[in-house]
Image 1 (cartoon, rainbow, N blue to C red):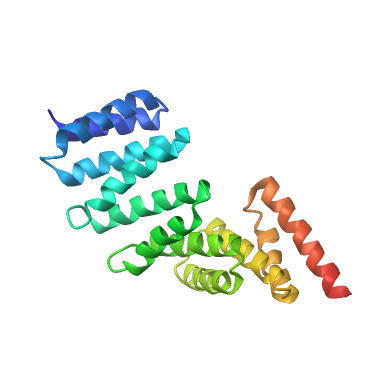
Image 2 (image 1 turned 90 degrees about the vertical axis):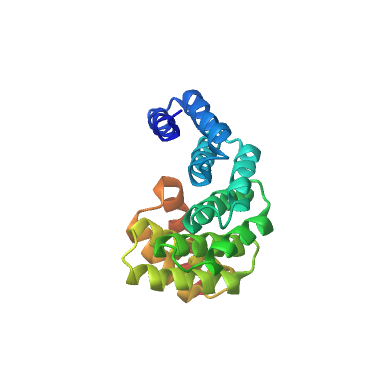
Length: 214
């Protein structure tokens, strides 16, 4: 069996939205390649996990990403980091915030050789969780790093808008309305959050200005 060809076919099915066929091909590679090519098996696990993500099957996703993480040292560091990021996202969706923080921390602390965008994405996600946990000072610190380094490395505007949005909320929670208004103004002007996010940012910005005027 040409495992690479089967994986490629699975990716094509995946791209076309034919998820059952994609799952079948990924599973075939996983079951057949494990003893022959661990890196290829890891890639198939990752792609199968991304299908599970689309289907909302988080437990299955977590299981596949955990298998990749357990092959640390046998598969590339970048693949392990990608698996940790996807698993962290599923943990966060399920409300397992400490588990999510742990996964993002692994990425941040394994920074050597990883793309800057991946590291900053992990910082953004961890900062967002800190904000959700009302650990506002930690959130502000993380998100400030994302904004400073993201601007330096010219990351996409929508990425930076998210960081400003979460930091603005953290500043608001800390009653630092001046800084909150500055961040929220950037978010509103960027128009990168979509209709619902844009409306929320505009409402919070208006509330900041009201409190500053008191």
